[in-house]
Length: 200
Image (cartoon, rainbow, N blue to C red; front, side, top):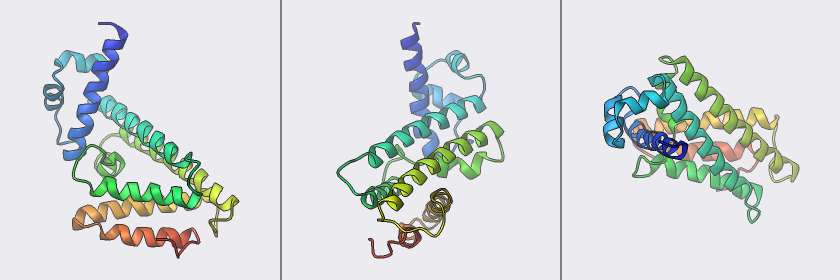
């Protein structure tokens, strides 16, 4: 097997696992289920991943990399104002959490509480990935402050951290209630924090 084929097999395992884990959670998905669905022999799994923890870290790292690329697409769109970019980001968050498929489900929401106490390597991967998201969000907010479309009472990093936590909490409540209503409150609070209470 050449390096390109090996990369494809590894990515196929991760792609299949993302769907299964997004639907069931990490602990409920066995390796056999992943490998059978991916049509990969068990030996291949341990060739690419030394343990289930290492597999979970790779899964999270890949998820966060794609997530951050998607954020950059939004925030580098020269046709939108900074306020419009932020509105698009949070609208896509809602769409992701309320959609019918498990393809784009947020693994930070799905796995954050589940694995943080079970796997230190995965907790660290979650911490690193969410910190990168917060940094990206802080940079976008700082641009809005600089162009005077946003008004903050604190620095952009602290604001980004508070807002990301707010949206994670809203996502959990939306799951509990099986309703998108928690996102209405999150959106309202977000614009208040950003000094744009009139934005919908």
